[in-house]
Length: 79
Image (cartoon, rainbow, N blue to C red; front, side):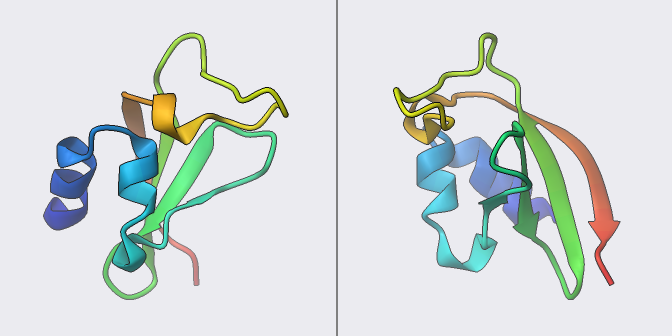
């Protein structure tokens, strides 16, 4: 978990973090500001965009390159 948090902290924005293949970062739902990233085994780090307002692209999706802050919500076992 510490490695993933360090990677989140070191990334300049959410696009940089989500580009890390080992993180398997993905949006929980297309209309949601929550994301998940792989930890060890079946554990996932759940976090949300903390920027206010949430930066959006013209098509309505979240602009990952403009997301500078996230808030960790939980660590969960998805299995």
